[in-house]
Image (cartoon, rainbow, N blue to C red):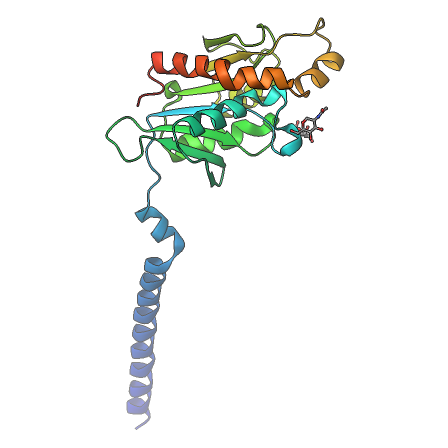
Length: 229
Ligand SMILES: *[C@@H]1O[C@H](CO)[C@@H](O)[C@H](O)[C@H]1NC(C)=O
Ligand SMILES: *[C@@H]1O[C@H](CO)[C@@H](O)[C@H](O)[C@H]1NC(C)=O
């Protein structure tokens, strides 16, 4: 009598364990199906063939500063090609040729401070599977006359906080830059340089950027196949 009661008792426990095990497995499966990560994997980030990156600081007061010329260039270019800069986790991204068979080109502005921009840039590169040889960083260049635009392959940060951060996060100096000349005041002293790069372009300079200088940059990027349309 005692042994058969014990037998039923033990059987019930084992059965209970099976049911619990099965239902928790089923629950996990259901949770996985409904979890945001499962939904995200369905919507894989678009793979970009090229990425054009503008350097600058966030916030309205920085908007028209010399140090922000990279960001200004990206906004100009997105606008010219009717692409919308959309907010993503790392900043603002516009995609050219999204609905065509042409190479997909990303235009990217960060929204963190210049001196840590390498972090979000490295994240975007990973997320959109861009090869480092297919990125180009647009930035202000003290060593060239205002309005001069040129391409440079690799090299040091030349004291530029944004480039420094990118070199740190990508762990390489070997990436292209599109340098936009902003003139250099008659000094190499940071006490003079800092307020200069953090000064606004004159109205006249802003007009020249938006009529001829950014167009020069776009031509250079087209010649390098960074912009195709
Ligand atoms: C620069 O322009 C911004 C608007 O873009 C303005 O808020 C700021 O006061 C200007 N700074 C200087 C130093 O003129
Ligand atoms: C980056 O720049 C911001 C604004 O100028 C400053 O507040 C911050 O301390 C800097 N951070 C680093 C890591 O240098």
